[in-house]
Amino acid sequence: MASQNTRVILILLGAVIASLFLGSTAADARLRLIRAVEAAALVSLTPSHTITLTPTPTLTATVTRTPTATLTLTPTSTQPPNHSATAPRSESGVGTTQPPSPTPWPTPDSKARAREIKAPILMYHHVGPLPDEPDQIRIGLTVLPANFGAQLKFLKQRGYESIDFYQLYYAITLGWALPKKPVVFTFDDAYADIYDYALPIMRAYGYTGTVFVPTQFIDEGREGYMTWDQLMELRDAGWRLEPHTKTHTEVDGRGRDFLIYEIYGSMETLRYHLGYQPRFFAYPAGNYNDNAIAILKEVGYWGAVTTDSGWYHRLSNAYTWGRVRVGGRYVMQDFANTLGEEYP
Ligand SMILES: [Zn+2]
Image (cartoon, rainbow, N blue to C red; front, side, top):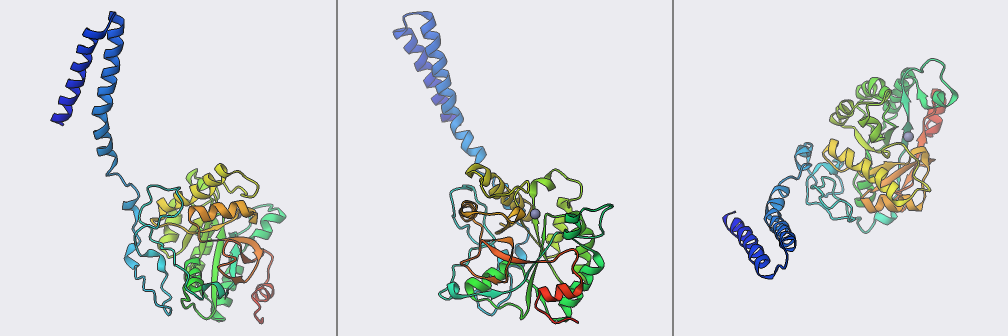
């Protein structure tokens, strides 16, 4: 700092001398002096600026899930690969201060393009009792706790095991082994009843699920949605939280700035809370177009689910994976039929 101060004083002195010799009026001299002081101030500010900025990578400290990491690239492993901390992969130019990514993108092997995994991705919204005077939409989106319990019991009896999108993706790209009858549970919108009703029932059967979170609703503490604390409990129970935009707005027919805000913004918010980079997206209301898909790819998503019906998941359709809707009015016969299972 001593040489810095010396430099500032020299500049100031130079300015004063210059104003004495060259200046025609006092006003001119004052102006030159002011400019010299500004220039000196800039010089003196520059180093301290970079010194204070460098050591503040705020996100690094929140990576708390690393301990379970054993990323072994053997095709027989069913270990979810995403918790191993490796060097960040520079993808898009969007996040210039990327913290280490715990979810390395698996470079697809030579057979990846040809792989197809058949697995139901079950789509739920509400699990819980109906509110007073529910409308038809709410009834259609709500699975009563007793029915949900019966569905899980059925799945367990028929040998289904829950997997997440990371396992599915690694199975496609690298041929990692999956359970014989894999199922992905998804819960859209992060409604509070998922914490109150679905979580304990899922836990009783040893299943975990994925919640698609409209992050701004959680930030605002909206009535009827889970809180961040509750979502963190799900995370700690082995569930996945993935983005569903910030404000649950449809992403087709929107401009680039809007899409970056909603699609990348929700990813960033979740990354902050989770401590790892989420990689899968659900389109609000199921609407999407090529433009939205291009943004998803650009900011680092690996895949996305729609509300269309679909069972077959490949790399080539990774941004439009279909799901299996579980309707609120389904009786067990419907549920079994949806899965192509005999009932009773
Ligand atoms: Zn939704």
